[in-house]
Length: 252
Image (cartoon, rainbow, N blue to C red):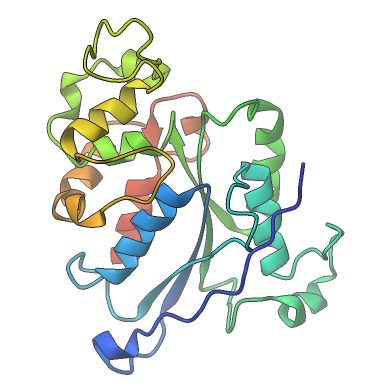
């Protein structure tokens, strides 16, 4: 597995929006792909509309040039550990007294701030890595924000009424091979991508999204997420997402 590196993020200018405000907490979000990155960048840029207080900062951590397609959850974990100063460039653990010196994030406080990795459960062959991912994240206080089967479930929750869909259909998220259910959609697209695109025209999996189509409905998404699994470990086996809990925590 190739090593993923993260660029130091260009500081987002909060002062222009809110004036000088003492920092309470920072969220460092390391995302599987451009869809998640653009979504949480939209959250960051619309904090006032989302009732996220001025003293909560959100950083979307970019991947280095040429590594934009790197997305395996274990790569995200190792990149996060490297950025936190917990491991060196070869993946070897660093002593605790070296963490602060080697941390790439300015003023990072592991007791105050949250490092988050955001990824999909349906990543191919993820099962063999899950125990190690959870072990490393628990040990280093990294927050796992997983969606099962994928982030499109969270996006679909922005629109009413998610209970109209069969949970097995959403969890299996099958391709539209015979066009029996979605005759107007491509045979290469899966159920959740098709359903999200019906509500947010122009949506395509694996690309950045137009956040303004989701912004007015985030309260609904948070409420609908509570109808499904939100526990970061149980999501491995059940339909659900931890994205709603992350939004709630940013607001608290």
